[in-house]
Length: 404
Image 1: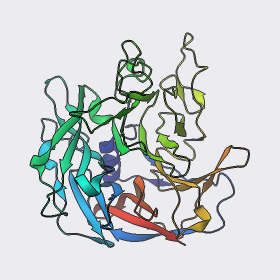
Image 2: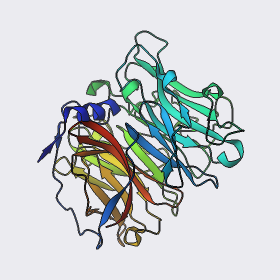
Image 3: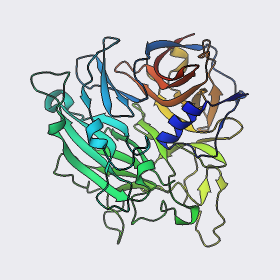
Image 4: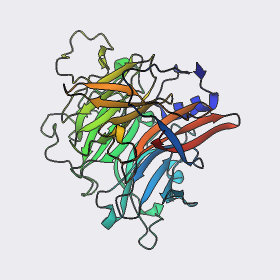
């Protein structure tokens, strides 16, 4: 049994994806028959302190952007990390609370028309306006320098969406554009006592997946959002009842939105997120009722497609439906991870049920590793981002998943 180093635990707490009571890396038994072939890590870079996301740039440059928690967005070009970042958002994070959890960029996304308009977006914690709050959750648009495609000016910022509150600093999750061209924003609901959680309240943004149109200023609400005509509901809401949707993606074949909702004390879960869907938090966690709530109507809660208990993992990290070429045995499988370093694949069986397999990793890091994100590049190949605890401290790593 391995244990987290103090530095690694602090890094994980900074992301806000596990609770302060979670301190142990647990072994992971095989859940089902594993794919017949193994995988291994190919190091891409260890020069980024805390890499939290990699995204493919939707143009013909062959670039990927890698987001560091502290605000720098790096460029991976032809397999090489460029020495200068695309942009450093660190100055936008300055605020009274100096904890890493409050001074953080959590996610980035490129506009679907990036090749023409050069726009990308960042989700980060900005200084609070109200002194009672620790920070704001903000989504902003930035534009690439027209004279230099590897540079963006921080002065190009256009604030698109922001909310304040006493807990939003640890509720940021992810932004991503869907195949419909709209921006989806996941916001958690895990920073308050259980009795104050707001994921079931449609007049709150917490515990929701939002959907907005960024092509209007500051943004517009799509007319077919499910709660546009619901009294006292936030019209931006696409789905609700989520604790912390840490990494979601769209199946390129079915266009389904698949996401990983981080559990609290019972289970981790994978969901297919539907329009207007209610996923049960905080009344339900995974396949269990988490809170006694005798008056709640649980009949409309949408069940996850897969769950696992905290004997298997601690904190689920969502991934992608694999459509690459390097790992044919993973074709049409949903590849994801747990923060404890375990890699999984989900298979949709002929009976439409989903089975989970633990992937065999032939060269796991010699030191304990925590995984922050599972992403893909332009070729739909899988990358795993995280932090390795070494004798001299934590080191960020970006790996490409290749045949073992």
